[in-house]
Length: 160
Image (cartoon, rainbow, N blue to C red; front, side):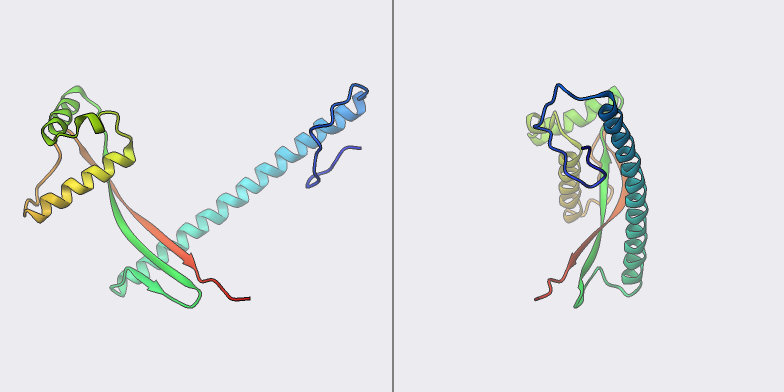
């Protein structure tokens, strides 16, 4: 007997006496599962989009109140604006960036840099420059990307 959507499938059972009807039934189940999966993915995307909109609105409300975080009985919510940086695309920018990394003594650590490491490094460099009063600082060869707002939310645990 073939399972239906939501039922367990025993993949350990291998049969050599399976008929074309069972094969068709299993293909039919695969089609139904794929369709159901697509429907759920669409529903998931709608819910995620709504969550993002509510978080954006909540962030705007808090910002209007001069707040960046709030703790309530149902949970905590906060936001921060995060600067990103773009990896150099052309040879001239790359050479400027590599020269800067060599001067800082971090070339070998960052030469195969992923974007998260690059953003972390660039943010630290910018913070140091700001502390020194250098408000026009920019790492040679690196362009600033977009500033994105990152939200953090935790739900308060309820004692049962």
